[in-house]
Image 1 (cartoon, rainbow, N blue to C red):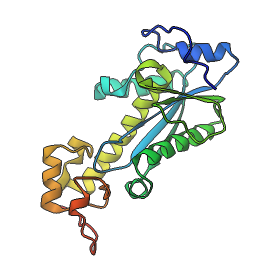
Image 2: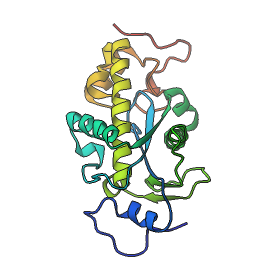
Image 3: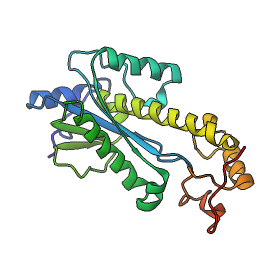
Image 4: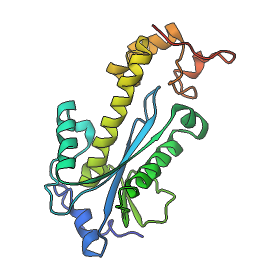
Length: 224
C-alpha cells in the first residue's frame, strides 16, 4: 500500500501525511521510531505515538534536534493533549542474537503492541526509515520520517527519553563506563573504559569495539 509517496508535499507541514490518511478513512494513525542503533551498550528502544488530530503538532520533530529540557517539555505536552503512547525495548543480548536491524524492527513492533494495550490499536502505521514491519496493519515507511511526520517525531522523543533514562540507571550499576554522559555511544572515553575494564553485562558483545574484549570463559565484571 503506497498512499503517501505520490504527489508533492510541503516540507514545513509535518502533519500532512497524517491528515491525508485521515482523509482516506484512517482514524488512529501511529508514528513509530527507535533510539539506540549505534551505541556499544544498552538496549534499543522504540516508541509508537498516536497524536490527536486537533492538537498543535508543530513542536514535534527529530529528537536529535532537541535539548534534554525540550524533550521533557514535549513529553509532558504529549500527556496534556492525550496522545496515546507505546514503548518497546530489546535487550543487548537479543541484539547480539538477531542483529541490530532486526532488534530495532522488533522494538517497533513491541511498541505497537504496547500501544494497543491502551485501547488505541492503530489502523495505520508510519514507520521511520525504509524497512517495513511484520504486522498486518497497513503501513508506510518514511525515510527521515522523524523530521517529516509529527507522529514519528513524537515517537523519536519518547524513545530517546526512555533509553536515556535506562542508561542513567545502568550508570549506577556500572559507573566505570560513564553511561550517564555517553549513553553507551562509542566516545573515546567509553572505548578506553572498555579497554581498561572489559565489557560489562549491558554491552553489545557482537559490536566492533566490544567483541574484541569479550572474555569467552568469564562474565564481564561490574566496575567500581
